[in-house]
Amino acid sequence: MLTLARSLDEWFNEEGLAQMERDLAHHGGFVAVDRDRVIGFVTWRRSDPQSADLSWLAVLREHHRMGVGTALLYALMERLRSDGVQRLEVSGRIVACPESST
Image (cartoon, rainbow, N blue to C red; front, side, top):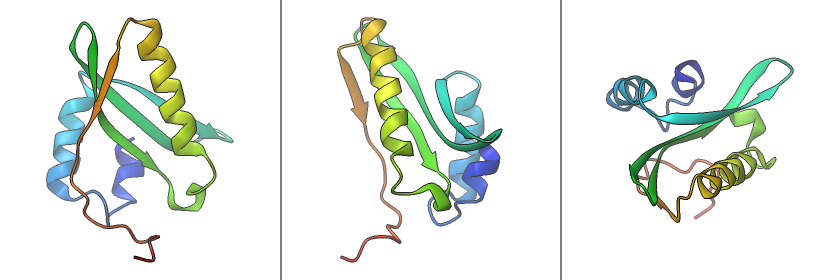
């Protein structure tokens, strides 16, 4: 996951990568794989019995707009729902949106 995140330097700086490395030791996660290559990931942590926080989400550039991120989020929501989680919280800082025209 860190290797993938390092390849997305417009979204992940060194401070973020260091935090991600610490988080990965304690957060749950899923990866998306294409031909034995990790192309995306999502991670989360439980904040209380009924809530979770989405901690990290990334997809390789060449797989953007192909539904990979959406599939990861659906897998996460299904897993959390089956574990009794009723709320998924998402927060973050928007650093750049290179694919946006606005």
